[in-house]
Length: 233
Image (cartoon, rainbow, N blue to C red; front, side, top):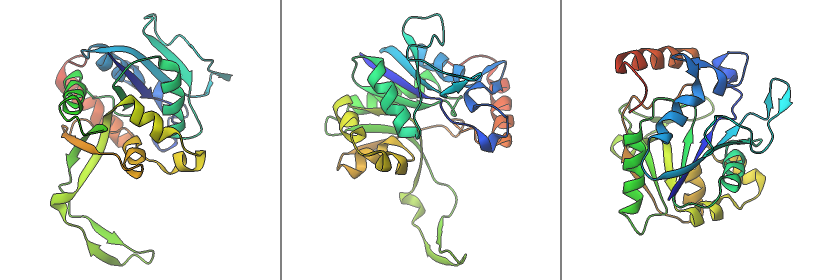
């Protein structure tokens, strides 16, 4: 059976909410609870661990913090970096393979997308990870420190990486077993797999699987949720 990790330890400074992003309200509930809802309804997921902000209402979140009343869901203190938070959650979640990693900042994830990414990994025995991603539609240029274009990249080969990302547990454990400085460089966990020589495949995701980073993103997410007319499916 699979296990899932939700990364919800970010400060949310760019969102300007004055509190951790996980607790910003979206559609009448805390942001992170949308991801919990989607993963709870995903077939094959046995347990969920949530890496929470270390400081909640002035106190450090202890291991086993009761995020919901459901016993399959636990909270753990997040780390200083994103990948440290993943490592903390993986250590706490208990046995299970594969491992789904999802950012709470992507609240519009659906159980269908999670299941498709899991199925892609299961269907590719040589792969160490499968990740949600979307083809880049804009022309992308490389720019130097002076603001001058140095190269135009081939758009057909570029994908914007998202979560969920699904890993074979042994591969993820090996990838995370590196010094803190290396973990700090990782903007997504698939990069840690890649740098270790692992094989990562992509699964096309909807443009609706957006990341909430700035206030504009939150407004867009509110509109998309209103169009859906209810919780995740």
